[in-house]
Length: 111
Image 1: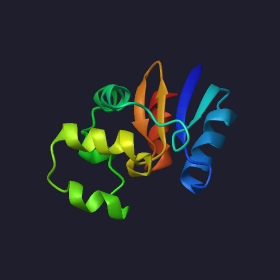
Image 2: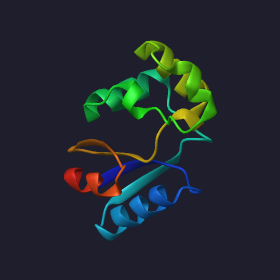
Image 3: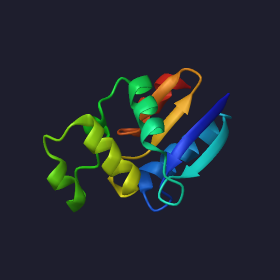
């Protein structure tokens, strides 16, 4: 099985999710999204496939997220693409779907 993880190596949940994918035998593509951020269109595709709104994928713990409260989906996606720290992590995609790994066990649904 192939999997792609939008990963932050400094995040323990992201590291644990990556370990879970590797233990499951997945052929994993790791994207350090802070260094290689997904485009606005790619984020929209991922969230649509996950059944999430961009607001649900927003990392609200970040100070830069505060001005986005109540913003349109388009504005949130633009902000995420421009400032990828705003993307909640980890996002994992397999042929079965996309899941936000919070909690990391949600990724089991697409393995």
